[in-house]
Length: 288
Image 1 (cartoon, one colour):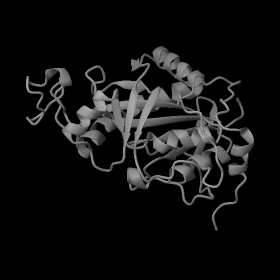
Image 2 (tube, rainbow, N blue to C red):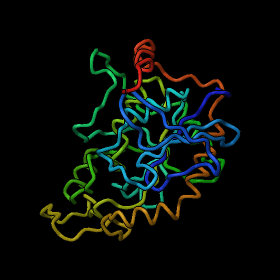
Image 3 (cartoon, helix red, strand yellow):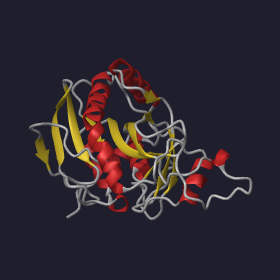
C-alpha cells in the first residue's frame, strides 16, 4: 500500500490537515462532497483528506452526503480510511478527554441514504464494522505515541442535529453504548461497501445529557431530577464540544499522523461485498 492514497475524514473541529495541500473538487455520481478533497503527505504517506462538516462546519450531521464523500476518496485510490469523530460519553469509563478506537456501532439514524446498492441486492457483512487489522495498528500506534486510548467502544449513532434527552441517554447506555455520535452511520457501512477498511479514532468531548448513572437512580427508578455525570459534567452544548476539540486538536492530529505512519504497506481490505459490485459503483459516471 506504499504508493496508495490513504483516506482521512475529519470530524468536528478538524478542518485542515496540511499546510499547503493540493485541493481537488471531485465530481461524484451522488452529488457534491462536503468540501473539496485536500491531497498532501503525512508521515511520508500520500493522504486524501476530507472534512466531514465542510470547511466552516456548515453541513449539519443529517445533511452530510456520506455517499459522495466516501466515493470520492475511494475513487482517488484510498483502500484504508482513518476517520476522526467527536463523541459524547455514555459510560463512567469513557469520561471527557478519553480517546477511543471504536469497534462497534448501533445505528439509530433514519432517512439517510445508507447503501450504494439501490438497484441491486447486496448484503454487506457488517458484524465487525471496523477493520481488525487497522484497529490493531491504531491501538499499537497510539500506545507508542503515549496517547492513552480505550481499545474498544460501542458508539450509538443518532440522527441529530439535536442532542439527546436524559431519558434517551439512559436508554442508549442501557443498550450497551459507551459513546454517542451523529455521523458514523452510514459513513462506515458505505466505505465497507466500496472495499475500504475503516478505523475510527473518537475523542470524548462531553458526558452527553449529563445523566445520572443508571445504578445511581433513586429507589423509584426516576430520572427526572437535574442530572450530572459522575465527574460532575453538565449536559452537552455545541460550544462546549468545540471548546474541548480546539484544546485537543494538536493531539488529535498527532494521533492521526501516528496511525497513518503505522498502516501496513501490504494491507488488503476485507471483501465484505463482491469486489465486482464495488467496482461497478466506482465505474459510475459523475452526476451531470
